[in-house]
Length: 119
Figure 1 (cartoon, one colour):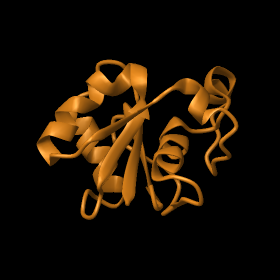
Figure 2: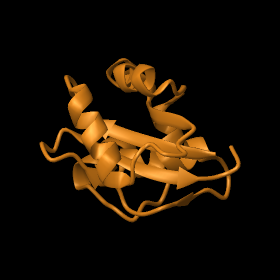
Figure 3: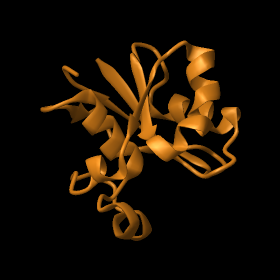
Figure 4: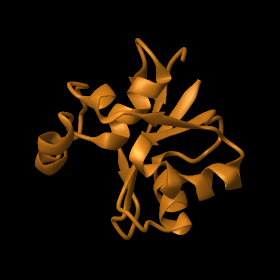
C-alpha cells in the first residue's frame, strides 16, 4: 500500500491539498490518505476527488514517530517532527518507509509525505 500522509491548516483548499500531493510525487499508486482524526473533514474533498479512503489517526499514534523533517511547534504539540510524515508511516504499517521528506504546497497551507508499507 502507498499512503499519502497530510498535515494542513484549518480551512485548507482542495487546490492546496492537490498541489502538495503533486509536489510529493502525485496520486499515482496511492491507495490511502491519512491525517489526524480531528482533520478528516478538511481532507474529505480530496478523498472524494480521488476516490480514496482516509485513515483517521489519534494524536497519540504519531507520538514518538521519528521523521526526517522536524518542526519545533509540531514536535511540542504532537511529539513528532512532521504530522504528514508520521501519519504516512503509521498508516502504512510496521516497517513502512517514506519515499522522501514531506512536500509543501506553494501557499504553505498543506504538507504531504508518501510512505510504502504492508498496511
